[in-house]
Length: 166
Image (cartoon, rainbow, N blue to C red):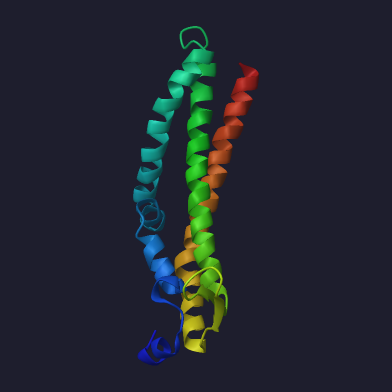
C-alpha cells in the first residue's frame, strides 16, 4: 500500500486485512501450509504421529492388539486421522476468513469496541493488491488443503473397507 492509501485508511492497523494475512501466515502450522510440500507433510506428521500414540492405548483397550491387530491398527489410525482432520479444518477456516476479508471491497472494523462497528471502502489499488494476494498466495493453499482432505478421506474410506472385510 502506498503512503497515500495509508493516510486515507481509517482502519486500525491490526484490523487491516493485509495485516491479518501477515499475522496468520506467521503461525507455525499456517506457515507450513504455504511452504514446501515436505514442510507441510512434516507438520501434519508432527500432528498425526503423536495423535496416533495418544489414541493407540484407547484403541488397545477396545481391541487387544494381540487378538485383533487389524481392528486395533484401523481404530488408532481413524482416531489420529480425526485429529489431523481438525487441524485441516483449522487451517481452512483461518485462511478462508483472511481470504474473505481480502476479497471484500469493504472492510468492516471496530474503532474501540464491538458497539461502534464502521466500514471503509478499499481504494482500487488496495483492492487490486488484496485480490492478487488471494489469487497467487491463497488459492494454491486452498488447493493443497483440498488435496490433503481428499487424501485423508481416502485413508478413512480404505480403513472402513478394510474394517468391513476383517
